[in-house]
Length: 309
Ligand code: CO
Ligand code: CO
Image (tube, rainbow, N blue to C red; front, side, top):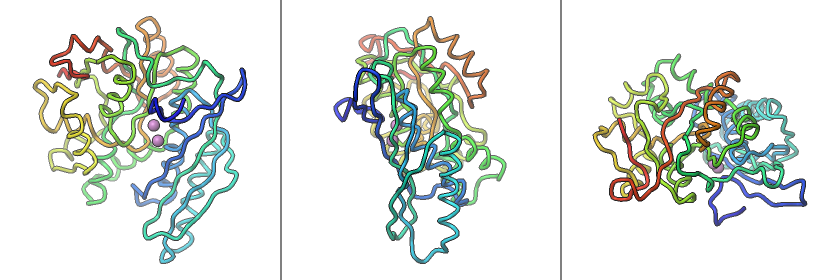
């Protein structure tokens, strides 16, 4: 699997037993705390392997860092990455650093998957339940935090959720058997959902009421704490979503650019209760059915997604 399917990671089959999973991700700081930034960047880098149902094994650090900042900050960033790597059972085997105007951190990650067990973003089937494993709104919270608008408790919860690995959710979905998966990142929940639906040749009905949202996000939205990326995501979906009577703030929220978001899983009705139960029992942030995969032709104007409040 490579560029043509637009999957989260490339998969290269070595033999009948083992395939390599390869991916890279890095970005500038989204939180002030360098240690937490390192954790989030690492969790996010591993996430594309987890979305494919793979197991990350090795990672290389990718670092950009200004010569004007104290080295201790860089050490904290790398320490955060190492902590997450240990939790994920990943070995950091090297890396590369360049001088840069703004810090950047992430990883190139190599994982493995059993051929045939990889979960792509193109297997969703009509009738499937769509399940989400983390609440949305991290773009809004982190943007508001940059403007000092967020209560510390809400910011801390958001940081914790972004730093959580998608490892457990991925292992459970492999164990139970699902049809398709993506991780929710920069294009927002509906942007990544569109990818999955398009590649699968289907549509979806999504319930706003059932979509899990981070605490405090609603207040921030009302104060117009919206990242530029989120607005661009909404514009990009102009011809793909029927919003019905959702308000502008609700639309923006559904498109909010996420960092290290959860998995969006398409699973048969038959397996969906079992998946929800196992995810809940394992302490995953949330495990909620947010909608159903339907025939695209049955949706208004044949748009890919219909939102229901
Ligand atoms: Co991804
Ligand atoms: Co990625």
